[in-house]
Length: 294
Image (cartoon, rainbow, N blue to C red; front, top):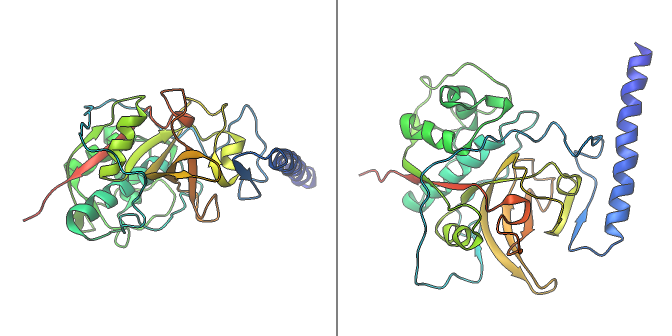
């Protein structure tokens, strides 16, 4: 028993020391972003992966070009409009897809009905497996949207999150939110993604298995090694420009708690040469359209 405990301590200590050195080295390079100590500090990185990622399943659905003669505003931040709920924490469950989808629905519902709900991620985790989602083992925002099209969605208050795979209890709560349909943003097109988020918060898939991403603290994240290995679902809530850094950025809401990043958010560089965008943010984005109830 003592040998096992020492073994685990050695593993975590090795990860801690390696990550501290990574933080010190990175922050000495005057980058556009800083990394720091957070819940991933004891993680040992093997081939760039941890158990917090690889929980996103790509899917294909109808794509719609958002055409507009109007010039996009210089900045968008749906948090300031009241369309974004508080930062959540998915904990030790690969349910990022459920948080991304539920929060996109929350934002769209607010814009149509002027009421911001906290809807149930747990219902999506427990009840949408018949569509191909795998609960805490991963899922797709599109398949989560499809579930809500077919079933509606309860509130977190009546179907609370517990970060485990459970038996579906969607008959014991009251459906509060419904959507008619959902669309994919045209792939690999940041201009279309920009036009989409002008209209509402957008579900996006990104690569998040980079140490620089997971230890992100503040600033505009820009890592050329973060590419197209989509493994994490998050919510795009806007974009802006930082004159001090002379950089455009996306505003990304994560589901790793408000102690991560900039109070649970990341600013990610916008408009790079690669059409897939930083960390593949433009590769697989989608959004719901809620029902208008009379």
